[in-house]
Length: 62
Image 1 (cartoon, helix red, strand yellow):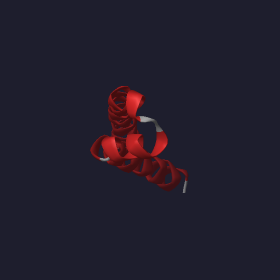
Image 2: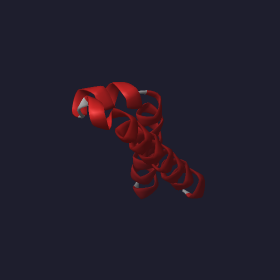
Image 3: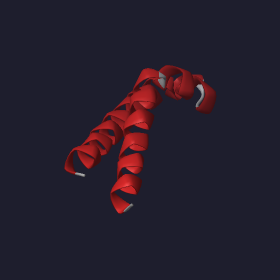
Image 4: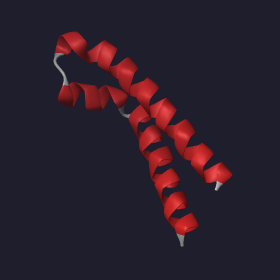
């Protein structure tokens, strides 16, 4: 049971990371002003990349 919960958490992190990478520009437009969009987009892509890596590592080592 514990393995299934950890697997679902890892899968959710990986999916959210990929979505954050793909839709970073649209998310930045909704959340931040025009002056901060490029920096926010870069930050969201980096955060999404890290989340995707952590999620896939959780899945791999589970």
